[in-house]
Amino acid sequence: MCRNSSEMIPYSPLYSSFRLRRPSKHHSFRVHRLINRRRSITKEAKEKEMEIKNLKLYMENKSIIEENNKLRRKALLLVQENQALFSQLQHKISDHACSASMKQDH
Image (tube, rainbow, N blue to C red; front, top):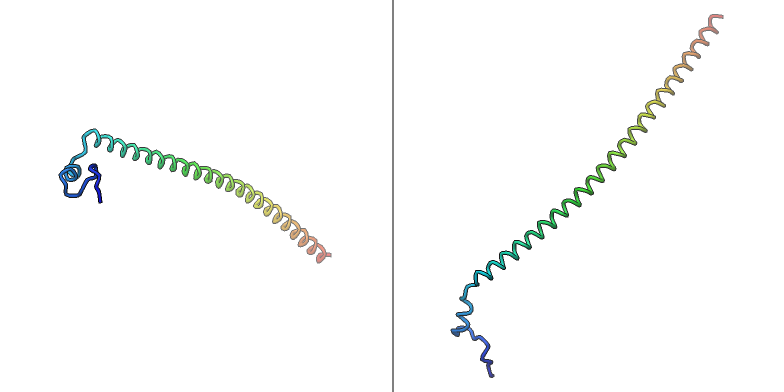
């Protein structure tokens, strides 16, 4: 088996010097810049996601408030209708009682 001279053989001086070599400061700076950029992008994405969730909750809350107001108006109308019917009932009962007492007097 023939080996290419450019191949690195483990434990050879070329391989070990390559493995032990530290990255340059420029390389390290680029890596940190990429990491920070990725963090910034994910932070922006999370902020955008939270903004969308907040808007959805705001719209849902607004819808619930509108529905609540509609139900309050309906309840008020029902209370008014109930009071009117109760008043009519009391009027009929008093008219009936009045006419019954008049019949007894005669």
